[in-house]
Amino acid sequence: MTDQLLYQEKQYLGRDMTWISVRLILALFCFIAYYINLEHLISRQLFFIVGVGILIVSIIMLYMISYRTKVTSTHVILSGLWTTSLVKIDLNSIVKAEKDRYSSYFFNNPVYNLHKNGKIRFYSGGKDAVWLTDKDGLIYVIGSQHPVQLLQAIQKALLQK
Image (cartoon, rainbow, N blue to C red; front, side, top):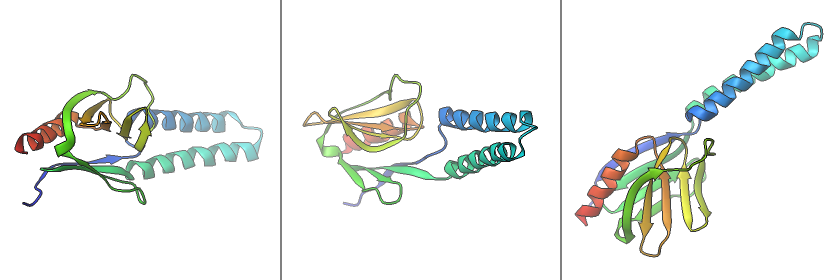
């Protein structure tokens, strides 16, 4: 039986609105310091260069893929950025799938395959995540920009087995 693709999503590293705001505020601070600092030419130029550098890095990060999520009829496949390993979650071992908040914190760092306290986390952006629990009690937390569609695809795959 071939695995049919039920869902696919790309998570980008620089598209989380919280961190975009932080980078833009830092760049704005640099440009204000550039404007105010009229007497010291060298430090004035440094503020301008740093502000432009922050904007360039921010633009580059908008197009960097953090990880891809694919749901097939038998697996949830997560492939990460560059050299990270491919993670395959067998849907035959999943006993519960639900949508919930990723974290109660306002700022969340992007993570891929972070093992901590019996949970394996995958997150790049968004407020909600899909929580998968397997037979051994291990919890997979998969952050998504479209958690409802991801959950529906996983539930559809679980019903097919």
